[in-house]
Image (tube, rainbow, N blue to C red; front, top):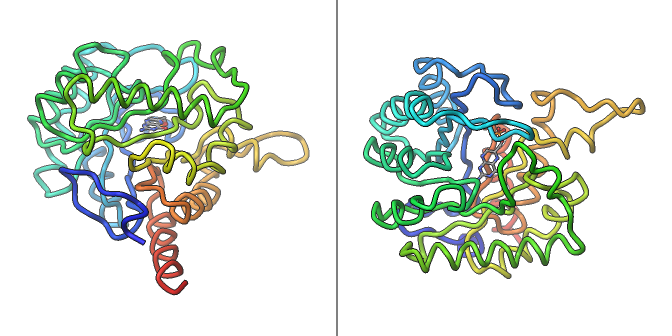
Length: 285
Ligand code: PMM
């Protein structure tokens, strides 16, 4: 089963879908409401997530929720780098969630092992060369532009085909820019310039995306709006972000069974259990 998930040069080889725990060092993240804004609390939260079974910890200092505006570079560095340094010093595999080359470089110098860029290298032209020079793995997410107006770009005729094509082009650009192909991870970018029906179609197509792109796949459904839609009551009111964790774990099980390399989640324990159950069931098949 392990080969179905894929391996990424430069990262440990897990024999199942890996679990990436999210530490948002932001005052305004939609899904955890800025609870980890302070450095010390963010570090403690990362350690707690590792204790609950996270294989990687993804540290981000900029909110990308729909309508969010950019954080300034110095502020992003101030938020992210000390948290990356402290968690890496504890021996954790740390990923940095940033669209800025400077933040990626400083985070790698502080011990980050992976750069996760929701723009797939398109927001900052210095990103791909910086990651290539650093020699670390790179997450290329499907992206159609900054969060401030991304919902206007949620137009597709065939969402799976278009996301596959656009992602393939972004992966090719990363290779052309000097990042080794075996260090690339693809991500369909759930919720980014997508409506709920697009997100559901992409989750349903996890195995196809994986096969079509030929690279390990990161699936990041955690607490997103499409899950709120799925869970909405008769009045149409979606549950709050923090009440979407069981639904997130359900996506984890589906994604892991379909061969995802990793899932990115805010609440780790249920997803850590889910990937282990999927491995055990796969081994028994
Ligand atoms: N989503 C968010 C932030 N970072 N990174 C990747 N690779 N894929 C995603 O879908 C993604 C991401 C936004 O969600 P959050 O604010 O809940 O962390």
